[in-house]
Image 1 (cartoon, rainbow, N blue to C red):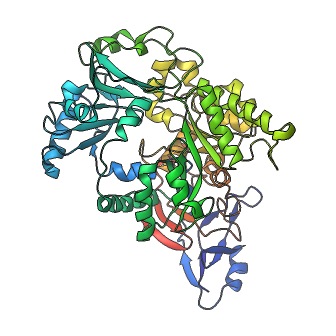
Image 2: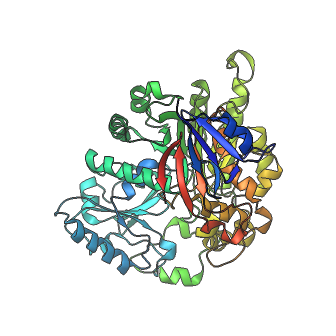
Length: 558
């Protein structure tokens, strides 16, 4: 039996009753005992491996409560537009990518990571612009949010999109002069994106390796596949067969397209095999606040005159988004949401619902309440049923209203806040919603006061899975322009750490396996250069991850 003794450092257990210990003894990938150095060294055997922390800080491995593992892998095979600040930058980047990769004519090109809010034109480029970059290649341009994007003319032709193509419910296909501009939103964009050919299996396997290393470099030991659609099933079969997966990965099936995943990975349902398990289902109820597609109870602010002026011309046709009283829109009707909630409850499967706007949150809770009422009464009662038994998760919950928190708690909903939005898009939210509403984005302190269990995530590849940056955001709530957005919603460092360890484990029904440095749990650890509890709050995001350990195995080292 292989034992390891961790000592000579600050070890944060993340347990309220005993937050620090001097040493940890592990055996065969699990924590055997914790306590004082004198006590633990006596328990260690002669052949125990001793790991000197050299004064560094060790705590439970970080738990990613929401991201898209395959999309992160895919992102490494796409033209990166995150640095683009104009249409010309986008064109230059795509042309260079095609040249560097020697992409032949006729082959699909994917570029991702642009944000129209950061472009000089303050608009999305349309097909006529993109045609200048790749006239001989079909091209898809993916917005950083993942909720919208643009196709060039060749791509539209191959996909059969014409002036007569109708947008699906909960989606937009923008038209101008009776022809598609190439710009699409939500269900329309996601639907046509799903028809774009994927890279080869061999390329994807290599990309999965890069994605896994990326997560590990940020101290993450448990990751999420936030939307496993049917087309991803062969990729995951390949990944599991390869033995490449070392981090624990929890997959959530697209509730609209789950048959293939459920049948293929039946033995993985709520059970790790090869480091992967199926955790439940995922559905989308709205879109993106920075993309102005999140579904709100009250209208967005009108775009400012200077923004409208920048977006004029054939690059930005007028859409219903520019109309007065625009509140975003829903992607599912109430009956569909109810059907999905009922399916998850009857199958005893966890349900993740993407809700950015407060109206989407309201719809989710309305239908949870309706289903709970039906299942909790009379002959239809589900055996052993109680509210929140599937631990329903509200993904993002960014504009969740303070008046909705009491209901969140009552229904047993776990909000998973994308709190780093405060830094990355906080200034844009002020323009879209005004200072008061923007200041309440990701109301973590209010949730904490209500006694609500919440988690924090990065929605990678939307942003890097940088846990230290997220902790910094939760504690400081500072925007890119240096404003403090909603100072009353800042939370203590300890509670921010719990949101990415203890609470993450609870969200995944793994509180007996992970989240704290406790005997019997997995030996999943992250080693930091400094103690975030003792570092100045402004410096938290600069703390380096030195090592990531999964079940006593060193997976990443700085």
